[in-house]
Length: 554
Image (cartoon, rainbow, N blue to C red):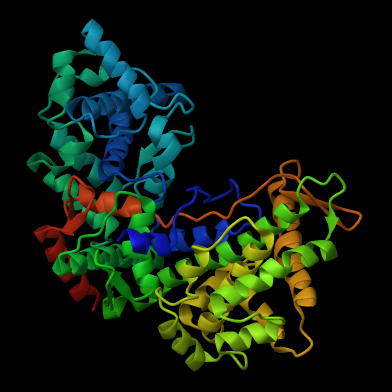
C-alpha cells in the first residue's frame, strides 16, 4: 500500500480552511460549500459522537438545575460539567483524547499527587465555554438541537434536542455525579473521579445504559425519524451511508481501510469515490459502484475531489510565480515571470511525462488526445482512460511536484489539461449545476476549465495564454479575496507599477473532507470497529443499518 500512497495525493500540510486561514485565492470557499452541504453538523473539529449528546444535556441540565440569570453563571455551570467529563474520560483510558487533553493531563497529574481533583478549570484556556464554544456549538445548532435566548444563553431546542438531553440524563441518572450532585462541586476525590468513568465519560456511550442515547444519535446523524426533511440532512445521511458501504466492501475483500492518518483515509475512501475503485493492500484496483439511490450525493463527492485537484493546479501556479519573483525588492513584471516559468525546465517536464515537448497549448491538448472542446462522451471516455495508474493521472503528476518554477508550472498545466479532458464535457451535470448555482464569484472547476477552450487556437502560445490565466485566476483573484477579507496587510503578493512583489511564500494545501471525523463518529456509534492499528471494519449493527438505509432510500 505504501507504493499507492506515494502515488496518490498526500497531505503535505493539513489546514482547516473552512472560513479563512491561509487561503490566498479563496479556494476553500467552494470546498466548504460542498462539505457543509454533504456533512452538515460534522466539521473538521468535531469527531466524538457523545460530545453532541453531552453538550446538549449540559445546556438542558444547567437551565433545569442552575437556572442561570446571567451569562457568566451559565459559563460556570458548563465549565464544571465539561471538566468532570474530561477528567473521567482521560482517567479511565489515558489514550482517549477529550477536548483539552493537555490541560486535562496536567490536572490529572496534579490530582494524583494531592488526592483532590480540580473540576472547575477551563479545558481550553482560550475559550470560556471550552469545546462547546470552540468546536461543537455551531454543529449542535445546525442539527437543530439548540437555540439561544435573549440573554445570549444557549438552550436545548424542543423535539430531538430535548429528547437527546433527556436520554443522556437517563444514562447517567444512577451515577454518583447525579445522585450526589457532584456537578455543584469545584473539586472531586480520586474515588469520585474513578466512579464517573462507567457512565459519565465519552467511552460510556457504548454501555447498555446509554442505548437510548446512542439510538437517538443514530436517528439524528442519519435523519431517520424525518426521512431527511431537508436536502442537507438527506445528503449527510447518504454520505454516511456511502462511507458504511465502502467500509463494508473493504471488509468483504478482507482488506480493511487504514485510517491512521488523513492521507491514508483519503486514499481508501475519498479518492475511491473519485476513481470508482477500491484499493487493496496488494495495490489492486477493484471497481466500486455506490447504492443506486445515492448517485447525486456520490457525484457531489466527486466534485469535491475535482475541486481539490483544481486547487492544486492553481495554487501550484501561484507557488511558481512567488518563487520566481523571489525577494527582489522592486518585484518583477508578469512578462519576465512568464519567460522564466516557461523555460527549458518547463518543456523538459512535458517531454519527461508525456513523451514529447509541447511548444504550444494546442500541441499539449493534442498530446492529451484532444482535437476539440470535449463533449460529454469524450469526457466520459477520459474519466475511464486516465485511471490512477496512468502515467499522467492526477496523482502521478502531483507526485512529481517540486519547487522548481518551470517544472511546477508544467505540472500544474498538465493537471489542468487532464481535468479539462475529464470534466469539460459534463459541466452541465446536476452536481456541477448545484455548485454553479451556489458558488457565486468563487473559483471552481466550472469557472476555470472553460478558459482552456481558447488553447485550441492555432495562434495560442504559452506566452499569451498563461499571462491571461495568471492575471485572472491568481493576481486579480488574490486581490479580490484579500479585499473581501480586509486583510490587505496580510497578503501573499501585491502589485505596484505593473510589477509583482512577493509578500510571503505559499505551498499548495489540501482541504479537509471531514471523512476522518465521520469515521470516528461512526465508530463511536458502534457501526464500525477500529483495530489497534487503526484499520476499520463494519460491525453487524453497521451492516443491519446499512441494509435498512439502502432499502428505505430505495
